[in-house]
Length: 83
Image (tube, rainbow, N blue to C red):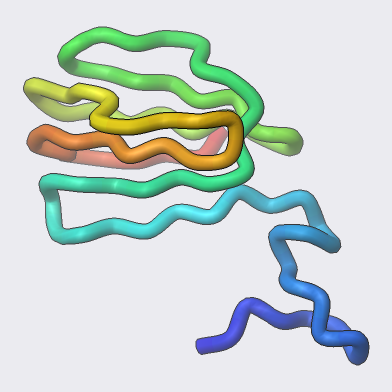
């Protein structure tokens, strides 16, 4: 699967300002191209992206790693919704 959508081979996350989400089972999620964190508790984390919000729900949620480009969320992830 390629993240390319145009004749110049620019990735969709760059051209359409999309957030990238990668899941590793139910225990880890990696998000790229987010703007900020709106809510963080041990049962929910809400991220603000350029076009929408991402709401992660589960148990024992923690932010394992973050910088201004990517974030790794760990714990028991029960659901992810895009608002």
